Image (cartoon, rainbow, N blue to C red; front, side, top):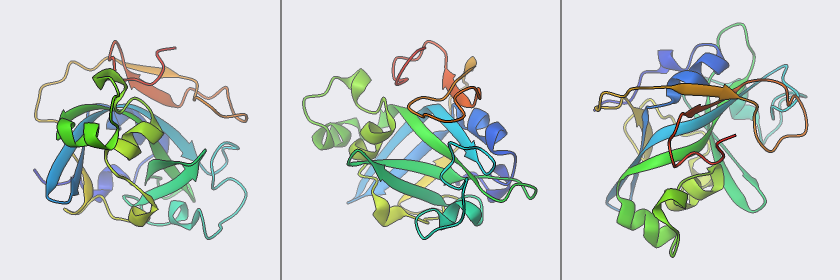
Length: 193
């Protein structure tokens, strides 16, 4: 399957976060094909105090101000987090944090990267999924609209989607925004409430 086109990410960041639920992240590394269905995501955009692009453009966050469809990867508590740059023409910066995946392909390889972890906990958080799929800052700025080491595709399975909106997790500012989306009753979501 071909990657989802750039036009998908050139929209309102919140809409993109919602619509990414059910899409499939594909990671190709060392001859292995790993994939997982996106079951949880959060939106962050300029004007939002919780967004890394809120204050100004820096060396760290510059990709958030750029062309949608590229990766913004940062570390927090010694773990990597992966975001896909997404914003419309009226918004100067934005991105969607991928919070959790339901593993589909390459599960044994993911388990080698996160040994002794139960399957439901393998990719149920932003740091966990980056560890399982070996996503690091080496992929910072990578274009997910092209075939390569990481891209997003449509789900081939017919998905009965029941997407829940809730407050974002682990932030101290702009906590009232319902910009976290997750697939209802999915056991791979990081937190159900």
